[in-house]
Image (cartoon, rainbow, N blue to C red; front, side):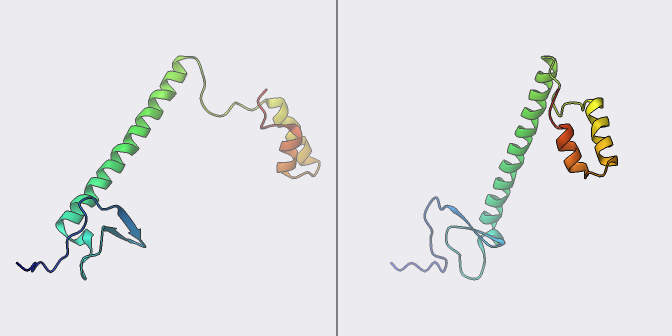
Length: 112
């Protein structure tokens, strides 16, 4: 019996391969790309759904961790700047130094 299937079979679990802007799974099938076939579209949508799910999990975990830190009395984020250091840096800028150099000399980025 002769195999008359014009589209050759690929391995059962091919690895995804990215080539430029096209997305292929396994070998390319004639002139039609895999993402244009129904199965390719399904696989593409499954990957997108998994990526969306992972993104939402990361956001949820981040929110939970920030809430837990606040409950422990922590203040997540950048430390407030010391008013004395800000005043010293502004005086250095008025004296002619660049803001970057003045901030370094006044040590405004270092917490008290």
